[in-house]
Image (cartoon, rainbow, N blue to C red):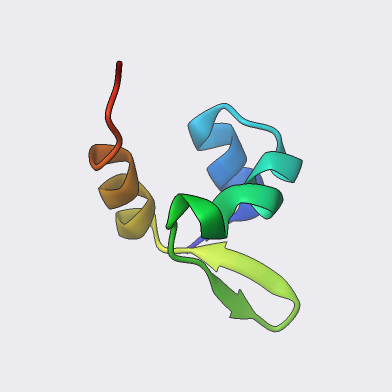
Length: 53
């Protein structure tokens, strides 16, 4: 599982962007207690599905 900090670093985006956009991006996240966590494979699958123009 990756934290918001780790996903932000991985994507090169600020933490605030991850918190504000993960749902609208269609990125699968999971609440574990008060923390938002992401499965690494879900992040990689989401990246693979992005169209680069």
